Amino acid sequence: MKSAVLLITIGTPKSYSVPDVRKYLSHFLNDPYVINIPWLWRKILVNLIIVPFRAAKSATKYQQIWTEDGFPLYVYLKKVRDQLANRMGSDADVWFAMSYASPSIEEVLKRMENEAYEQVTVVPLFPNYANSTTGSIYNSVNKAIKLWRREPQLNFIKSYYDHPLFLDAWVDRIKGYNPDGYDHILFSFHGLPLSHLPSKTQINGIKVKEVPNYDDYEKVCYHFTYLIAERLGLKEKQYSLAFQSRMSKRWLRPFTDERLVALAEQKQKVLVVALSFVADCLETTLELGEEYKEIFFAHGGEEYQLVDSLNDNSKWLDALENIVMENSSL
Image (cartoon, rainbow, N blue to C red; front, side, top):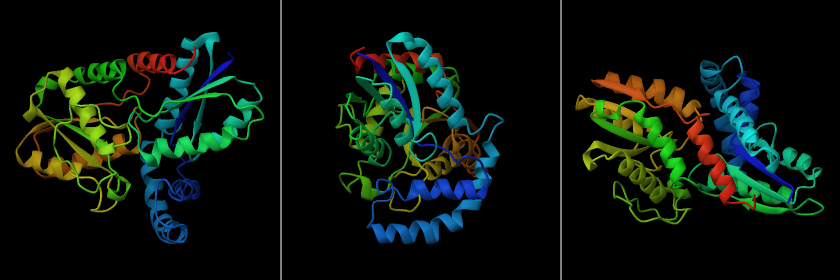
């Protein structure tokens, strides 16, 4: 079978200019999978309130971590694509797309149609499923594929957080930071509004040892954390889980910044691991790496260290290659 692999991530503004950031935010936040309220209210909220007031502030943040090669998320996306293509060789072509930027899912799949692929394996670069990320990508991919003159076999990978090689990649990355030298390890996940959850009753701290349904975001986060902690040999008091990037109080708790304040007041040495992300971005480099770090030290924290994301780490590429092979006919 003539095969292709399509890697997809959220995207990035074309530049850190305010107009480019405004365009990106408008595209992103108008997605009904991201803000799941009635169409008219979403348009008013996003286009008249959020984007006008947030664009300039967000542009400043993008500028802070922009590199000569572009936004880190995009840079690592290209590196991972290139390395995976080298590994796949003639078995499959490797493409990449972004949900809210160029090259978009729609334009890439249009180009792919001309290659007459019989099999397409789609890998959203989000290890655990959320409707606002992987769910949105799934919808976009299916819409675009249905326009093909001849639909290929579609292998869509919705979740891979518990793949053994993926877990090994994270454990190896964390061990590189000497976790035994810290009092506490805080695993931080991107938060979600409570309205996105299957149940409004949060589990808050309960160990999840059994494999949950892939689309139960909160339980998956706890299960993911448990699997990593188990491989690191951590005792229950040595680690905890929290959720970052909240937009209101009606988001998943506990909140990462509040958890860090509590740890700082206990004069703890803290190692922070952002398991939601496979590449560094605003939420890791800036939010966790600088803003939350300042909060931690302002409340008397002893030591603070953020673990780099997997980025283009070779063990992450090992995992990605195996995930693709196991979920396709290659």
